[in-house]
Image: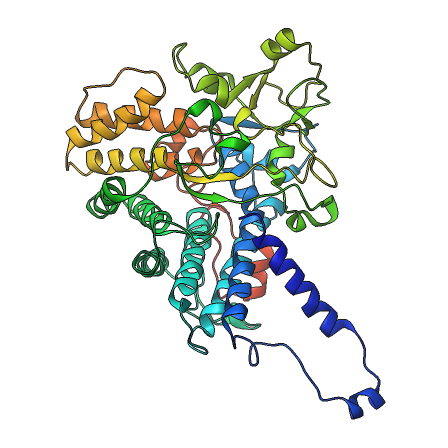
Length: 487
């Protein structure tokens, strides 16, 4: 649903205009005062719908989570023009980041903005009754769980406030909830969503029962609750409407919102944006950031050469693995084949994240900032691999785990495996890396399975499992929140 962004932007514009026009005293004497605020809003289905759209709108800003989730891992290097190009990216790549990092601030700010918008709806969820209200509330609770899950996996314990908005002063009184309390809220929100949503969304891009089940399974997996993860994920596999699609077209425009899509963040190139307000873009900013520097040639548009895959990431694919070419572009081979020209950026590896390279299109404004490529947040292949991992690591059923794993391998043109136990675990880990390279999951997969220190250069165990709370947040809390260990 490409339109859901425009709806709320127009609503916000109307609100801003209403509050920004000055009024003379004479006019106020003659005119009945009218304001739009939380006390006189939420009076109709349309009010709830528009507010829900506002929560969806923040999803587009989570592009930075995807970029940094790869840059922090062993899949890619920061790239860019120079060592001073987006310092925050460079620091995360080299594991030298501190509480003063604009890009980590973005992860904190934009995901909390999503939580705040969701809480705004939930604070008034019972004000007006209408048919279909439970579905809207279920979508909002799914979205709150989505943003909250991002925050807890990046920063660990975070403040939560139930179904109320945060207000000025809460930073001094609301503590950081424990990780267990945060996950409990996530699970509660997702269970409500599962019970009140259908597998088919009322509009393309909105959350479904399947999306809530997949995210719940993922939340359990991150907590190593393997029985619970296996139960919800196998239920989804057996009863959901999803299937693996053609990998060659999976990340092209024709592959958006297809049978493999469990949840996608929707983007459009129809509304331009600039560097003065990256969150204002309706396009996928991460795509232009990953483009080939000074590129001239067919198929692609140029970009800023960030998030460049390593030689190791390219070499992990065997020659018969059909995922290699659609996943990682070998620019030297491509230039030799097509006559394309390009410039080498900082930390140039010769490879680019082909899944999210900017492609020729008619986007508006700065082409680098308004790419229409959707982010495939949860794919059915990921569901299969998470289920396989839960079944295997939980000692539940290696045979069923192999079945799900081999579905993914066979789609890639590879033979099935017949391993079990720890050997099967390692194959599942390897398969996740190959299948999901470039999609922002690798760092967190390494952390949650205790393998980060052995695979990420510069990673310090006991510190880098979490990212630092932004310094200004610690200062605003005036001692209420402690910084994460090591920072």
